[in-house]
Length: 181
Image 1: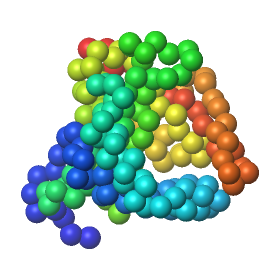
Image 2 (image 1 turned 60 degrees about the vertical axis):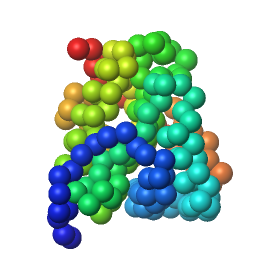
Image 3 (image 1 turned 90 degrees about the vertical axis):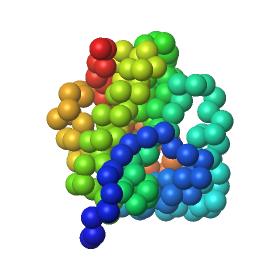
C-alpha cells in the first residue's frame, strides 16, 4: 500500500464525494457485517446509496446534521462519519448527539484516519452545543468498541435489536461520552 502524497485531513463532506462515501460504506459492510446482513445491504443499488449520501450532505434536515470525511493527501475519501442530534427516546436533543455512522475504509485502517475522524466528531458536536455523544455499535464490533472505549467512551446500559430482512436481528449496545468543554 502506498502512502498518500500530501497531508491527510477531516472536513465537512462535499456533495461530489457521495459516490466515494457510498463505496467506502459498501466495502465496510462486506468486510464487517454478518454475511446475511451484508448481502441484504449490498443488494441495494450503489447509485441509490450515493444519492442518499448526496442528499444528506447537501440538504440535511437540520443544521446540526453533518457528514464528515477523512481524506488522504490525494483527496480520496478514506472514512466518513454522520452525526446529529440523538433521536433516542431518553435523549435530550439539545444536549445529546448521535454518531449515526462511523466508517473507515478497510484498506485504509491503521493510518490515523479513525483517530482524526473521532477527534473531528467531538470538535464538531461541541461547536454545535452538544455536551454528550452517543453511539450504537453492533455487539460483535469488538475492534471498533476497543478503539472508542480507549478514548473514553463507555457502555451506558442501553441495548437494542434491529430487525433485518435476513431474519437475524442485529444486536447493538449504546456507548456514550461527555463532550462538555
